[in-house]
Amino acid sequence: MSEFFHMGGYAAFVWPCMALAVVVLGWNVLAARRLHALARERALRRTAAGKGAP
Amino acid sequence: MNWTWFHKLASPPHAYRIAGSLTPWFGWPAFVLIAVGLFGGLVLAPADYQQGDAFRIVYVHAPSAWLSMFVYGTMAAAAAIGLIWRIKLAHAVAAASAPVGASFTVLALATGSIWGKPMWGTWWVWDARLTSELLLLFLYAGVIALRGSIDDRGRADRASALLAIVGVVNLPIIHYSVNWWNTLHQASTLTKLGKPSMAGGMLWPLLTMLLGFTLYFGAVLLVRLRGEILLRERDASWLRTVLAR
Image (cartoon, rainbow over all chains, first blue to last red):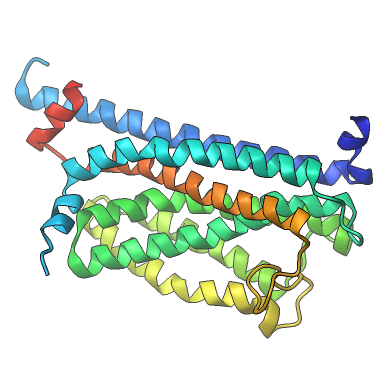
């Protein structure tokens, strides 16, 4: 197991790359959902304003 | 030919609903493929005889580099469709693509740099492959900044579409840079003519990751597209029915 984490001496290069990939993959999901939620909120406010009370 | 289906698909309510129901069909297979590909790449694949275990960086570097170009192609194609046929949904696709593509260009550059240090002895060289990939990041940044700097959405769509289309010329330059110039970057492994120069045990995790990343982009694009549609459809009556749910 420790051999696996050691990555043949390249641990300092392989694991940061994997971590960065996880960060980018995670950020894209969060950012996309946040955009959708924000757009939804704004649209709700718009339609409520146009119609009077929600 | 009957184009009714196309116009129906390009109408915001349909696109919004279809995008919503398609998302899990991209997202879950992407999740499984990336998990399997990472396991295959980090655990099952044998170490490279020259690069040792450092070669395993390829399993995130190559898919992110592929996406950086594939997303740009998608963005530019959508921008062109929006510009030529004046389809608002296409501009929404282009707008949704740009930040995703930029993030994967950053990932490709960063992982490439980290891989370069132990293999080439340097984090960065101004060779053709690295420089043209960096230019791709600037193109994404330009498209995003241009869109953000224009208040009128229609004009922002058209201006950023033009820039995106002009920037397409960089895609073949990136791809063929390793053949056209003497670069430090290694030549193509998968797309060269004939069979790929990679052993099967190393190859299948890479192909799995490439497919996983591509489906992942599909899922993220669909979620972003739904957001863009909501932002763009001012005062449309269908908004109320959609939001009521």
